[in-house]
Length: 604
Image (cartoon, rainbow, N blue to C red; front, side):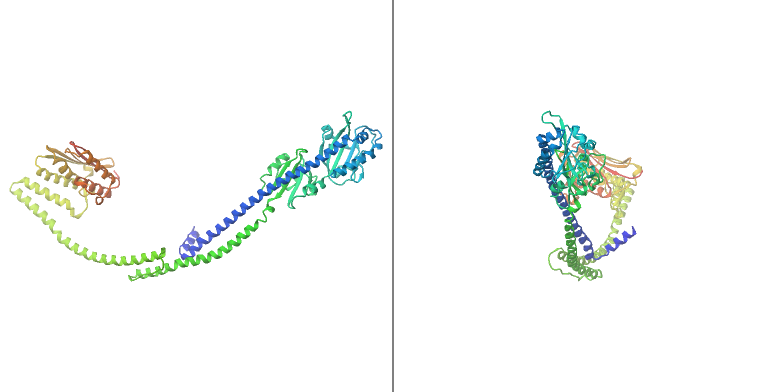
């Protein structure tokens, strides 16, 4: 926390040029790096997507080629099935006599088929352990004995298929093709007698898996791996010959796969692999899966140039931005420093200070405003000095004028005493009330009353007005003792009482009544002035309500009349003195008017 405070304190005391550098340069660098990284990500995604499309096309093409090769093997087996020499070889007890004829047929078929390298024909008849017919593209060869072959899975699957072709992979260690040291893609199929359609023999056709891989899978780029796996996860052929005969779980693409899943599920789980782009397609003929895999890291390696270019641009921008920001900051701070020096001289009392900046930009306007401010300050100081001199003169005159109110009070009291001496009590009471009205109105120059003083002023005022209008009205005053010391603005109720006399009672043809009440309801002090005079017309009442609601000051109101002036005056002083105080006006034409003031107070 202290460290952060020290860093913040140092930052605050840095010159403006350095502050601009601290803000602008990092922001520029972040923007450049963000754009570079975003470009890199977008490019990577596009490259990966295009590679995925290319791999899907390559997978489909390779699958078609593998299917074509398989169909060639099936066609080869169908030819064997229909060849008479093969039929005789499988049916004859002296099979040796037919070997030469079959060898010629098979050799011609292998040359025509090109991809088929090996063939073994087994007779299902009891041939007393005779050697099976075995041949390859080089000539006659040796095959696994029938007694041993029937123990292999190839035999079991062929018997179970009952004439349909079955496919698998023969390892050199299996010994089916004796002396052959290559992995073979094997087609095993029962050959039936063309006349009886009963099983007569079994053909085992072999294709070099490595050669198939190099023929069909080496079309891809050097960094792309292609392989074919069967439903059990055995790799039939691959662009990498060392993978042939392995399980799919041994490959890096399936290292994290669940071994309990099927091959199809494992392949589907690689769709969103983080390291590899894996495309696969299942052959409709064999059920094998043709798989193409490519490393994403290797794929986007070339895109690293974008990052290098971004770094280079960032460094260049950093150097340029440092220079530009420093020069731009200097262009801003130089006039500010000039302005600061002038302000320090101004503080010492030198009001002749002026600054001159070229141009009408913000700095130029600032200089112009500063010069104008100095000029006005000088004028204000002169005005204040003159005003202070006038104030001193006014204070002297005020001291002299204070004699006048005292003289007035003393004179009125003297008249009151003389009237009492002569027995004229009515005149004495009127003079005394008038004296009290003057005394309370002046209130020694203070702007506030207690409610007791305000009620006293209203009482004396109404007493004088009652004597003026003789028997035209009566009045009653009520003050709750608990709030008599509550402070209110001076002359708060008197203008309302004056309105009641002049606008309510005076136009009345009969006798009227004015009631003034001050009481408390919980946390609200209520002041009421009510009369039973002529009231206010509906239009005039609406106009007064609107003016009170707007709350405009007296200076903003025009032609509001004496009634409106008194109400606006009271409301404005209430709002300045009390928060949340309100004035409510109620009147019925011909029935009288009631004005209610609510003042919210705190405490008991």
